[in-house]
Length: 370
Ligand code: UDP
Figure 1: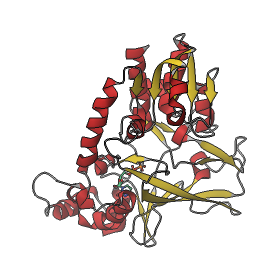
Figure 2 (figure 1 turned 90 degrees about the horizontal axis):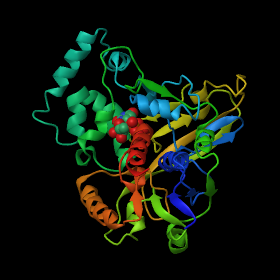
Figure 3 (figure 1 turned 45 degrees about the vertical axis):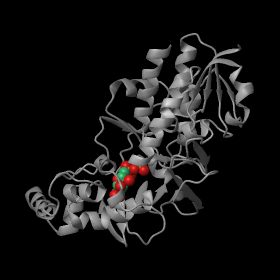
Figure 4 (figure 1 turned 60 degrees about the vertical axis):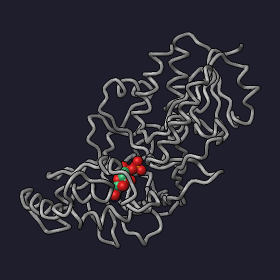
């Protein structure tokens, strides 16, 4: 065998494994079916702007080990995510904080805001059973109707009553004027772009792009002792137990000959009528400056549309409901019988992972495996 490890997928999970395996003295081959490395964190240069081709990626973590790990490969800037919500032209601060409550209800003090929420959450008694109940119990019906319902139903293509409560628990609710979206100790965007960061992780490692593992499985498998597979678990087994559901997103990206389109990296369109879920203005991830600190004269925006995944689309978000959870458990049992193959990452484990959790999970595997 030529290699100790064949890593299928050059995203964050694969890049961590490949880097660590090489460091441990193993020989590694990384393949990816795309023409580029970096998976969904891939950034591409347009007019000196790092465009997040597969959607906004803002690195954030509370895990010091992960932070120390990833900052070996890039310096991170001080970007803090503070999205704005646009509901039929009315703007609100996100996540839900005193600015949001003031705009929604005219309340001035935390006490008034808390009283308003307490009054509205009364309609939910007992443990919230779905996302709608969870949202109302967190912030009340007004905010649910204007800032959550439309956005969530566009993003997931499902009624809020049919979605699990945990999705909304990602969002903080604060009785302070703090509009930092994440409750994270560390946050930022890698200077130079994510693609450069992943290239640094993969330095000195053989990479074959435009190489579809599942199409050439037999000939690729003989190259390595072990395979780390980060693609969709159901595709690996040729969908033989049925297809897992994913949400996909599509981006319409435009270069505009103006310096400032929306004044913020992310604006969420939270009404049901606007067809896109959000607009990303990429230059604001890096404060509108190029690598030399000059103001950029143009701007690039991406409208994000959410859709149900169908074969041929890029899978983005696993749909972690009961039905899919049960099917995944069956695939996982099959995966455990594949002695030569380890399944990992968002698609390999069918899990709504943030970037830091993917890195933590890859590092765990390295500790067990290498
Ligand atoms: N969400 C919402 N309104 C918003 C932003 C988020 O209701 O303006 C809810 C929605 O249910 C979404 C979840 O919070 O699915 C998580 O959103 P986030 O933006 O964190 O998801 P990601 O960035 O991973 O797509």
